[in-house]
Image 1 (cartoon, rainbow, N blue to C red):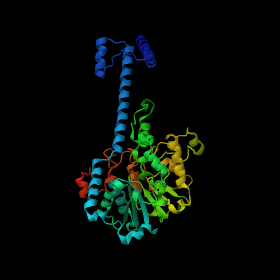
Image 2: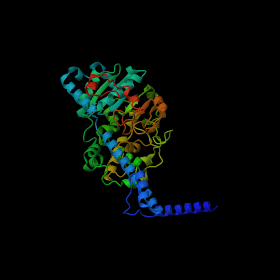
Image 3: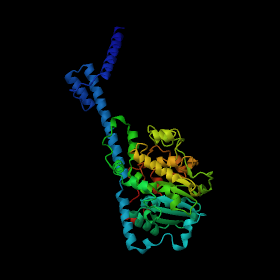
Image 4: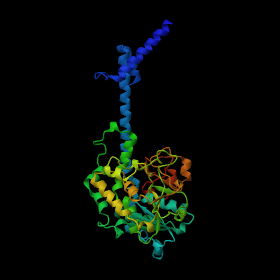
Length: 452
């Protein structure tokens, strides 16, 4: 009985000491051991009392927590830099194909050939638009679309790229045709409509020093990492991807003007893979709306499919709070069916520009993340939800993506940092992309773009 009472008193005393240590400050002169073995050794040699032992234990745990946290932030920074850089093999591919364009007449042949030019504006065909400066990614999007189609002879691809990538992109599709589909390659500078007068806001976005520093500058300076979770920090880093100030990324807002003869198009991001015939998209009745898109506020994946306006906008800004509903459902870019005929009857572009101007004037305090937030506003009331099976998102940031769901999706989207062409891509999700890469191609082999 006495032994039990002594044990109970010891336990009470121990809890009392733990509470005192929890509330107190760790003595500044306390020497923390580096390992549990050293702690045991120090206890034996120095005969520490229970309170000192508790302080040492607390100090060790807090030190290790700090180290783990710092390591996590360092990992996120390294991942951000890896995602923002151009892999050596892809850079090599662009250079070699550009050189081929200047030395090989076959690489310069007209795309499409003259007899097929009328198809570029024939609305009985299925027109896909892809805007990218990544030749390898473009090859996968086009190849997967054509190979998955039940009507490849009805496909017309309009690939838009920048001036520096144009020759290489043209070479690739000239030397690797996707017959019977038709492919057109155009550079931004070849569109007469894309003048400074028509895109003044985007020129400001690309050239303003403050904006460039935000996207290209030091992402750690001034950041209080003690007040932010690693997950939120990762989202902030993703929002600072330099691609968000690229004209290629904003180009989709000008589709009605760039393709004045087309009525209905599917716009694809360059980090998607097509796994099913997409021709039924043209049969969807958008009910007078402009944009057929998958909503991202409901679904089995609570991380990927839980996006509302509050996830994209700063509702402490009075202009945002006054005009938007934080609970409104967001939708996805990446695979959209656009009714350009209906679009031309709206003022979507003007609304997009005006909100971009407001965000620039507010020093990016209204939203941080790229092209989707102004589009969420500009297309407000003009989006027709389509079945989620058409477009599965999150393969570039959700490691726990359900493989069976991936297999069933018509379009899978590697949105996020972990692109399948990068080493940081998720190994178990990469094969869905690599199956459409022709690793036997001489240009890929010479640039050491090899199957993992």
